Image (cartoon, rainbow, N blue to C red; front, top):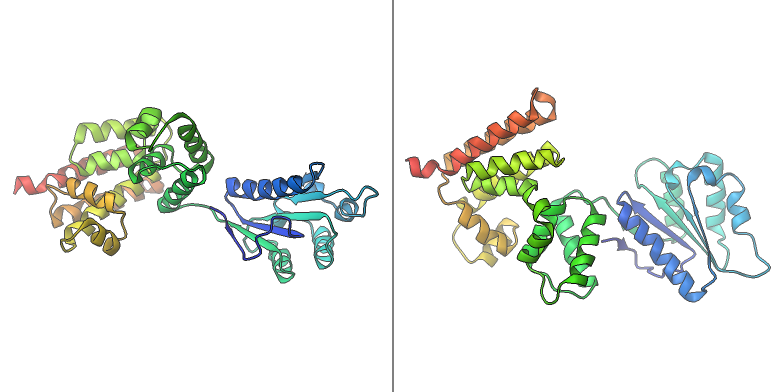
Length: 329
């Protein structure tokens, strides 16, 4: 979900797309190109990398044409431009040519910040394309994708899709398009399961769900399948931590409606219901033991141990035992 400045005209003389989320960067370019071609079907598009934009190249591309053609000039990885080329771009920013839209894609860090500042100073249209590292951001992205295609999907379906496909926004966007094209009516968790069952069962969150539910065999099977299909061990420890923390948060919260607890704990209401079912059998001591096990596993998979798989198995077994601690009295 790219965020834009108040100047939201795709045909503004200069657009800067800032961030490191490739899908959002590409969409920012596509939006400008589509608008330009809607205005002139013969729009010339030049998509350049830093090594292709040498000193003098921009002046050549933006010089007046006998045919007065509309043109879009895209510069990728603008933070990597040479110092001489940056001078050219800054000079152009002060007097952009008519019928030409310049699109600068910039990673947004300290490197090349002078060019970014110069573009902002002249009032360039800005599209923020931040890397989506948080599960909540990816969940919001999936919801927005369904809204964009005019389809309804349940919160559980959106979460299942994120659990199944992980952090790749292109895969998530493609999955939304496929489901929207193939399925009639509201898209629910069962539909996502049918389409992506293998992926969903191999997800890190499935490992966590089975572990906090005290289902040892299923948790270990899901863990081995996740590792076999390339799920990063650090993603599994993260999911385990989220699962145990959710148990701890809800067990220490005051009773109330899911909507009220959701606001208090920062969880969606549907997750409150799921965690309530998972927390049966847990004690405060069990939560503490499980969190220590997750911390040890996290250290193990980040270089503190010789066998990440063993560290994860040990953590899963400890969490399963903790999930059954109330019954053992």
